[in-house]
Length: 102
Image 1: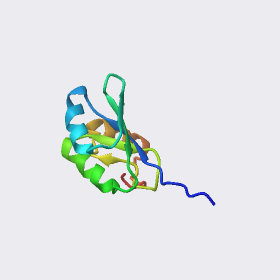
Image 2 (image 1 turned 90 degrees about the vertical axis):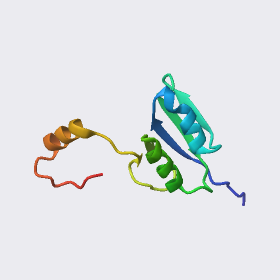
Image 3 (image 1 turned 135 degrees about the vertical axis):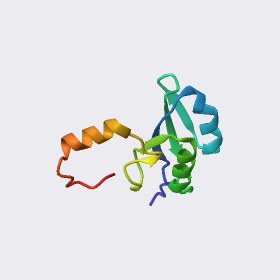
């Protein structure tokens, strides 16, 4: 039987071009590619590193991300934002507050 190496977890992060150097330093060698004029980062988080490490780094930078593959880690990583718009959307879609917050 062939041994299959664990695959990295793909994470999509929202950022600005000015935050690229800080993200590069925080990810410490994890393969990262940028798209949309460096407004989106695609991070291949190594399987041997804990996803909580990336979550803490993103929180420290004030960035948010969505894990796209790998074991479940929750719907979002990093700083969760939304503010007034998210509140209005939540009130419109769930006026009786029946669904839990993410």
